[in-house]
Figure 1 (cartoon, one colour):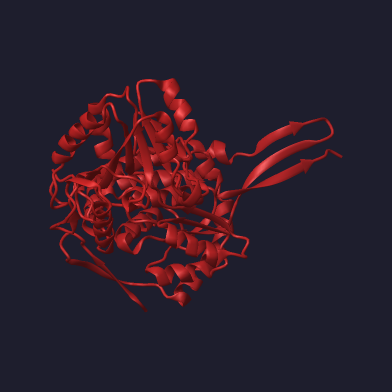
Figure 2: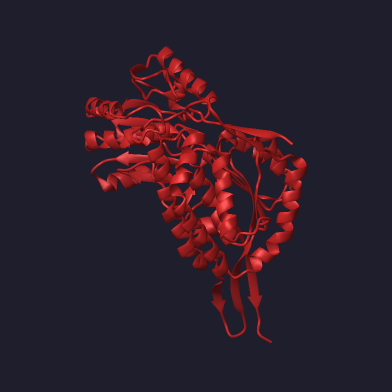
Length: 455
């Protein structure tokens, strides 16, 4: 059997050596899930909801220990790990509060001679290949509503966050989810590839564009529901009428939180020329206040880059921007604890990689623009389309601008925000399908049409 080694990115210390899954063990888990799913779906929804409430209670009870594990294996500052677990609770509450209505049968036509109904039937056995940057958020966006909807789940956490994945599965099993209904798959790329070979009814992936495209290719020709939550190069425009200090403080956090390792991190900033210099001044002052260091320090804001190979990506973007004439005003280098210095460039343009390809690190380019038209054109000059934002005092102008931007989520005077009440989706290379909202519950079902004629 393969062995998966888990290492603390900030210290290099080995945390665990876990027995991994091979093709045979994954196939066995898939067979067991298939056999167990009908009985799980036959349980009353109220019973499945009660199980998820017990899971929520267990997360609360073990929150500090879970945060510690998260920080140790992905290098996220401990305060931000706690934030993730605290932020998970309202997401769980949304699913618990809205599952019954979202999954209820719908009466769409009534006539003395004919009634029409829609029921929401579970897909069956679904596979989830999850991400490491927010493993509680991203995993529970799939696992929890999929289970509530009556599916069995083959869950492969990222190899970078497998200890957290183990905790998630342990707590769900303890809450009452049968072990065959939720199966943990341990491993890296080989385990993911073997999972794709199974006779699944849906595949839900969160991760890179490159891996998402490989998954789509692997499933081509199979009639399997496919959802891909991929990357972004999320832009924000600061209009001439915005408060430069307020916008700068908000956007610095949006760009640098979790060391920029967020799917919806601010990755490109366009600022109107009339307030550009003031904005940059306040942005740098905010960044200079971010404490960098040991993720276990309660006051650390910038922690480790979770995956060491990403450091080379950031180095390459910095070198490319310098070579093409950008002005480096902060950072641009590696730090101890596998961290990267918060890096800010001005005088950037779209010939540079840091304005075109996902950074997934604390690196940002700030570009001066002279009009709303120029800003919108630049925001849409991308093959991604996850989020986009506008800072302005004028709501009418903001709504008009954001309506023209190709993105799944748009923000007025805010950024880097996810709500369980709203669908999370992207366009272009940011993916297909959605999670969250009531649509993110129904996505784990297929509609069944009922034509009922009285005798």
